[in-house]
Amino acid sequence: MLVSATEMLKKAKAGHYAVGQFNINNLEWTKCILQTAQECNSPVILGVSEGAGKYMCGYKTVVGMVNGMLEELNITVPVALHLDHGSYEACLKCVDAGFSSIMFDGSHYPIEENVEKTKELVKIVAENNMSLEAEVGSIGGEEDGVVGMGECADPAECKMIADLGIDFLAAGIGNIHGKYPENWPGLRFDVLDAIQQKTGDMPLVLHGGTGIPDDMIKKAIDLGVAKINVNTECQLVFADATRGYIEAGKDQQGKGFDPRKLLAPGCEAIKAKVKEKMELFGSVGKA
Ligand code: 13P
Image (cartoon, rainbow, N blue to C red; front, side, top):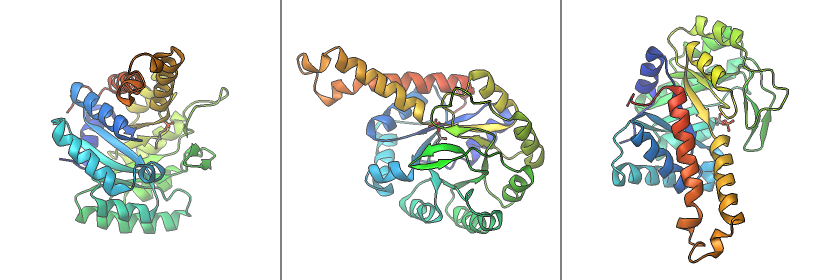
């Protein structure tokens, strides 16, 4: 059964580790991430962006697929199905479809409007036993065609949003989605520290987990990050492994064209990457 992410992230924050949010794109991604979480006895959050939701034929299809897998694969670790960077309308759709967690990304609104919309969602989420992530300070890079500049959140605004009754808070600290440019100056730990001082026990979320050096990840966890989002890195290793298979001509040997064979190296690569991240985040054995 799907669970909200509230408990797993409270435990993570108190225990000084982080739970990974791994974005799903299709059946293979979902299966690989769930199997790895089970093998690692780790809680996990499946992230679904609006674009990925559309690609997978809508939120109801995603809920059906994930619930089916939890049962058929005997998944017993805590799993949350979470809308990633949702608009207000997408949040309502996911509540309706049976997600267990949503992120409302109101970071592009003036703070007053972000507060108003977040407040409404706090009520709706409570009525449905779900968890809610809110965002302050837009996270840079490109996601679903939207390019942000990578702001740093204002700690006072973070406190305003954190006090509304949300479950966890994403705050920009110089992180961006996708690959980091060569000249990226790194995470702003001074800003993260100031945010944690204002928001106390609130689990903080680090987006753009791809390509952040391990030592920075560890320091971010020390400063209150309890959820780390990873998407691009799984896509990169999947593409690499699939290219290797085709370049080696394996799709042309025997029944190597069978999608179950063609996609297998990519799947193994996703599993290895998810396991590596769970170990780095410290969530192994924490289910
Ligand atoms: P990356 O694609 O950079 O790993 O970021 C994922 C993310 O933050 C999803 O919200």
